[in-house]
Length: 113
Length: 112
Image 1 (cartoon, one colour):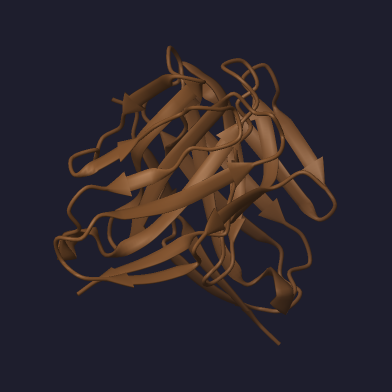
Image 2 (cartoon, each protein chain N blue to C red):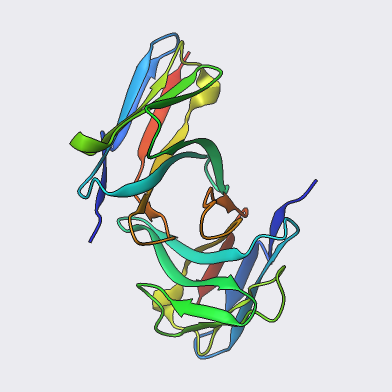
């Protein structure tokens, strides 16, 4: 079955290190999104992409970057991890700009110590 | 800016009750609304998607309605079961945007 997978599921890293979270989908969806989920804030959009070579900033993009070199993958990089970036990160995808039913990965729990 | 509110934030009910979860949004110009379920430590599972031209969608014991003019959607869960315990989130795709805006969810506990 087609799916969206995130790796790793859990990660502990030190302040200042660069970290990359992987997101891979096999549906051939054009749209891909990264969210973080925190108590008291709900889901907040970090970055999103509408297709290969397209990336856009969301509401909480500072300290994060993404690249889209193919349809299947949208890795999220924390340039220099900070304790404020301790969170649960979710990747999602949808078909295209018209068909926007979203499907989510299982999440990555990141702890920055 | 579109804002999405879900009330109540938490709900605890005995098994067998029929439930209504509420989702309200500030801008009625939406393309669609999607309901999700999230189990603890898990990702979001899509339950129902309602297009702006539709009034309701049904899947099994779940029924979601949409009233754009009043900025409201409800998720009706019939004959609740302990397995329905989870957090339920709604997400609205605003007009002019392709990105869903999420509410903070309703945490539901159904006890035997």
